[in-house]
Image 1: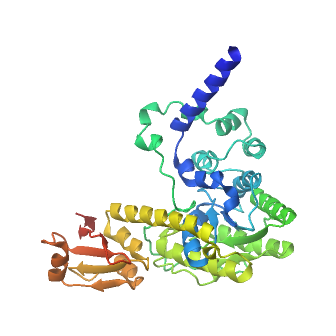
Image 2 (image 1 turned 120 degrees about the vertical axis):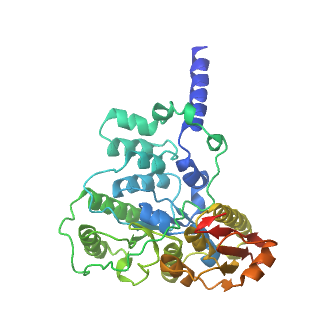
Image 3 (image 1 turned 135 degrees about the vertical axis):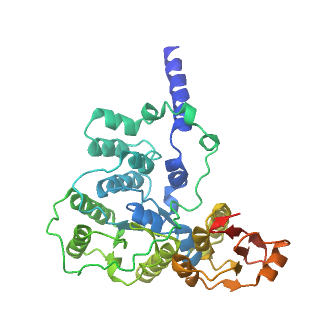
Length: 406
């Protein structure tokens, strides 16, 4: 009888934990953990990678099956343990790892964000080992292994989304559509390198390199551009020598003249949709040129399933576009060749908004009369978009006044 009670109690507590836990980790990662062997390429790292590489666009353009496992504030040690947990279930052909935070001399940063990156990982030997390595106290180790201990008091915060979790269709990527102008930013010389290559970050980077080498997994190191401080740039430049020592490719993209610092950033640390589109195509071109990756668009069974995933991804993007209530953020959703947009504006765009419009080549300006004809009534605003899909169907027709959706 007591054994049955214990088992029943365990089931009840697990069900309660599933409801009470924060859903961000489940939304981002659960699709990966359902079938980790499906992906030839894993993207690992911090929020720079999280926001920069769109796996579903890699599928559409190159037929690459990939997943973005990067997490906000994930240092190299946390990234190492994410990789080790995933490797218990499958091995990819290629891992692409961003090396930001290699300069840090601590094992984790931002306790809440650690939960984002690791809550959804199934319990395993490496999950236990990782928690014991990252956290020095039994209390913290228990918290990150058994989430009910910290989420048990969320009953009053529960919303509908806690009971009906919407899994992200973006294969782990995140979309940012703000815009900041960092035109005056300049990178330092490649030769300016930190002498500190004994940090915790460098130590775990070596562990990642050696683990991939042992398993014959191709590893590509990246340094995704951002508005970095001199110390950070020097550390990223110092990775060059380590990569040369291990004969691992290292793409320090700050020196590739890849991004426009005046329009491609949502904030000082992360690219927006314009920047991510460039980054994704850059990585797609690099991987297909240097590695023998299968184009699964030529395989009917795989392509049918991924075509369904891609349609779901497009639908989620469209829903987010329809929910965007600021004109400056709305424009970036139009950076998609599947859309044709007809635009009425009372005044010529200025400043950052003008820079955003300059990135697009799928917009046709129309008069107020034509816009009102399309809308079927008076336009009570100074800007109106009429967005059509590939079939010529209007999928969104927002009107903005002083930058806000009406």
